[in-house]
Image 1 (cartoon, rainbow, N blue to C red):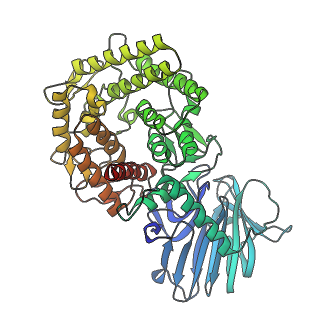
Image 2 (cartoon, one colour):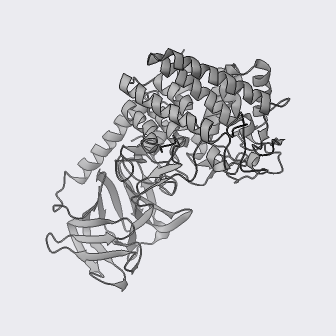
Length: 567
């Protein structure tokens, strides 16, 4: 495995394609344990088992290394290694080291914690965990074992201690019962198979990677390892935003992951695009997020789906049946905005809260949360253009003309009501009052590209350049009094804003600025990894450090740059 695919498990969890498990010291939002834990994402993010050394080995001397196929933690006295045999089974082995595997929570109540016992059927040790509703079986393959807290209730240490020179166990996550464990091969064979599976994925998704794209292989790993098999409310294979605490699929994040996967894994890419539409409500609205055990409708996310679908269709071949179903869903999603988020006397739809825009706390929403921001009609114009093309492909030519007219009208209303002399304003749908900000959100209509008059795209490009730091596009201009270095959408660099604006600038003819934005973001990822967002002035990664849409943003921009260089 190349050096590019080694990583720190404090930043990126050790997992595998299809698994709901990971191994990491990250056990909750911004919570880092001293020891590595087995964490499950079924029913939420839950640390299940703790791996802790015993005897003379101390945490201060440990060196933890990870590649896509092997996790190792080494002490002066001995070492341990882990690899995935399958999405729900992990092999762990050690030599010269006593390792204690215990329940992450020491207290068992009628509603929380883990019950622990030794199964008289096969002699394996089983943790039954309330938080995930699953069982975790530890089968001893070699070495000696000492049990702790077998059948204990209340407060107790529960688990086992492995030793005896060399030892090996298999740990499985399953539901109510399973046949006794039988090894599928040796530890080395298992690790080699996992390595080969990852390499096949990386070769498909990023065949262009080279020394010029040093973060591409690790970006592929972030996507590959964050993919879970269908379970719960996710009826398709799903790329979670992270296997840290952001372990959901939000209703615009999925579009960037779909685009990054499209060329190499078209079926998986299509699943990413469609899995949110699997939960479209009767009024056409999409959920805010979906994960294993919940679907949330309290907010929505911006309608970038038409923009994304046009790009997907340029790569992925869709059947007439897929086109028709997707056309119907996209039309209903568009109608949701135009019918339920637009008053009778209003030309433009509105967001009910910054969360609906995806830019949760961006400064345009400081004045009023219920607001007409310029990005929303811009996205809907692109969506209506895509609906017009789909209708024409389906032979519905009059409907296609209607979508085109609606797009023209909405674009004209956007310019008439929200364009000022050099930027777009935000408007109250209740009072009609308008205001501007130093947020990059005000400049997002650049996504319309050549749809906008040249003087407007030039004005937007000039203002976008004012947001460009050494590390990328700050979401709030750094000289703004409202700028915050770790302010979420009030300053940090984000992948989705970068990808959308870079694409709009390029389609508007401002390719030099687009090239600069792409280069700075790619360098940022190569330096600081794939964090949820980044400090715009220092480049430091912020919040969740293993975010898939950041990895996808890097892959999209790197692949496009490599294509331009090869011409």
